[in-house]
Each structure stands twice: as C-alpha cells, then as structure tokens.
Length: 255
Ligand SMILES: [Zn+2]
Image (cartoon, rainbow, N blue to C red):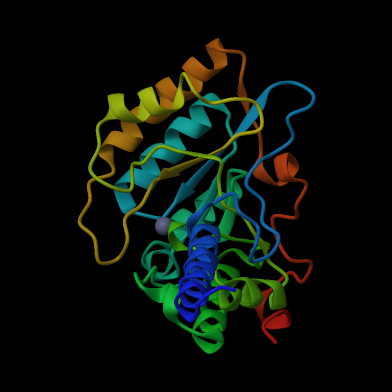
C-alpha cells in the first residue's frame, strides 16, 4: 500500500504537470488547447507563406513598410494596436486601400493582461474594433492576442465577437532589440510553405523600441524567399478566413 506521503507527492506532481501543460498551451502560438486558432496556412499548391505585422501602426516604420510592399506588389496583414491606430488613422486607411488586411491586436497591448477576465477582454476587442470600423468602415474578422498568449477569457471574447484567433508559425523576434541580419538569418533559411511569419511594424505604447531594422529587412526577406521559390500570400486566402465581419460598419456589429 502506498503511504500518505507517496499519495501527496503523486497528487502534487499531477497538479504541477497539469499547470505546466496549461502554461505551455497559453504561450505556445501553435497549441489549440484553449480553443481553435490559426497558425499555419495551406501547404498544398504553389509554395507560399504569409507576412503579418504586429503592434503598429507607427508613423515612419509602417509608412516605409507600405512603400516596400507596394513596390513589390505584396499583400500583408497588419494586427494593429487600437491606441496606435487612433493616432495614425491615415495609415489604416492606406493599408485598407492598398489591399492589406487590418486586424485586431487589442486596445493597448498591456503586459500581464493575460490575468484579466472577460469584461476586460471584451472591452479590448470591442473598442479596437470600433476604432478600426470608424476609420475604414469594416470590422476585423481576425484577432491576435499580445505575445500570442491565450486563456479561456481571451478565446471566449474573440469567439463571442466572431473573430478568428490568428497566431503564427515562425517569428522574426524583432519585438525586442535585434538587427536586420538577425531577422534575415532567422527567417530566410528556415521558412517553409505554409508558414505564417510574424514581424513588427510598430511598438507597444509603453515601449521605445526602434523598428528600423525590421523595415530594412522586408525587401531582402521577400526577394530571398522568392529565390527559394516561396511567394507571399494574402492571409485571408492562405488561412481560408474572412478578413472582415459580414456587417459593414461597427455601428451594426457592436452589440
Ligand atoms: Zn504585439
């Protein structure tokens, strides 16, 4: 017979294993334990990948990236922070007019927000949708949680708003201090068909990071991946998702 001590050790071991599994599911961008998410695109047909940018818009960096994408005729997806979008509505208008997808990346990208509850997350998504809707006339169909962290409250808020949760399969690690060479070395040799790439055109409202290394990496990234036979794909087609909700304005979709 097992002693009480052995039972206690086994019980605590099971608790620790359960919490570890939940923690991994929360931070892994490809783990769907908390609910359905989209992190990889079609890998059949011509080899393609998708470009996604987070944390913008920012005045100089987002404009420069839009110039490069326009020159190369590439469509990307921008997961914008509502507070940044409010400061640069003209850049949202430009993204939408030039065929890029505008998606929801919360109102203020607060760290430690993963510990907040339903009311907090519903407000984060709703107010960002309202800013985007009032600016470009459509409500985002895609949402990406900050740092890809997921909880039941976050996933529930997105589900109730009819938004698909989109993460990524490969990232540039350019949300922290980096160099253009580091970004290219992380992505060019390793990207494969079906990858959703994560880069950052913007900075969090409380950060002073310089995104210029990301800007400098975009053109060589696209051209070198093209040399490897990989072409960028629009995210909605790539993931078979709608970029925007069926309602055409936030006013008709905010309930
Ligand atoms: Zn972010």
